[in-house]
Amino acid sequence: MKSIKPGRGPSMMGGFMSIVIGLIGVFWTLSAISMGAPFFFCMFGVVFVVIAVVQAVYNFKNATSKNRYSVYDITDVGEETDPLNEKYGNTEKPQENIDMIFCPYCGKKTIKEARYCSHCGKEIPQL
Image (cartoon, rainbow, N blue to C red; front, side):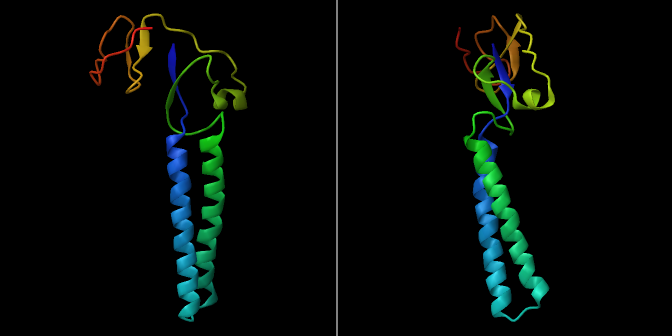
């Protein structure tokens, strides 16, 4: 049975955006120094760079690790466990609902016998 669990996509995007924010911080710092700005304004850019590096490391590690935290992925129960359950002690396997399944395209619940998803309209592959 398919289930929705944390996914990789938002973490990878977050990692790339952290790099962009870090570049903005470097540009800010160099611009402030070249204009003779007070020390506080120069440090503002340095703080941006430090935060961006920490965020980039976290997001890229999260996007490439097996058990990851993020928005959504649709997987089988046996493929991967939910890392939040492992971290906070709930290691029980989810109960299988024999009447409902998840659409592999949009993740919405649909009846097991349905040929097409009632939400997105795509054909559901029969297992």
